[in-house]
Length: 323
Image (cartoon, rainbow, N blue to C red; front, side):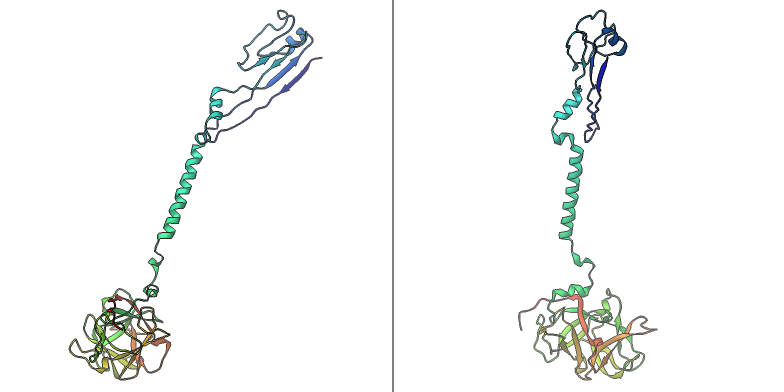
């Protein structure tokens, strides 16, 4: 009987970049009692026999370099193929790990670089770049005499505004309104002390202090009197006078909401008119014609939520050190 035991194993060991393969040659063992049977059944690359080689296999092929042939007892033949590895595969197996995985190394390096960049941007970006001026007011900058500021109505976010346009009713003086846009130069007011005050530029302003607000463009003073406002019929608020012409109708008492003692950007304040007792007030009632889209500013004698204002944009002079 001819017994043939064959084992065929293929190994695929792709490298991480080139998909090179290392192959294992099959190992074949043949045993035969008769050379004639071996001649009919086996066509092997290499044959080694013990006994009659001239009457045995007549066709020979060169065996691979790594093939190993051994003979056993008489009348039998054994052909053995050992694992054959080409030179390039051996060099790949013996190469350093980092050299055979350079592509993965580059990807990892790029990932680490992008992660580091994201952390850097997260830590260095200014989070207030989309904030409104109200958010920026959390710094609590001191408001001093001589500072030029904008006053923002807390509820509607409109700025206290004036322009060289007179009222068509009431006193006929320069009108005062609430303006919706931030970037308007007619919304700047200079903080001034009263005529009989000894305060000077750079002094801080305590709650309860009487101040004046001068319109920067027209040089007139924020003013009020008993004339009726155009829309709601409350106390009219206007601009009146000039640098050398001012009276008590321009006096407003600063009332800071909460526990604040001096006026800062983050303080919610009310301005209480000394002569009429009305609080500087605004609401969402708007003009249709001359000041279309702008809302009415007037005076009311009751404390309301619409009486509250905040210092917003402006040029804030540093404190002089006096209390």
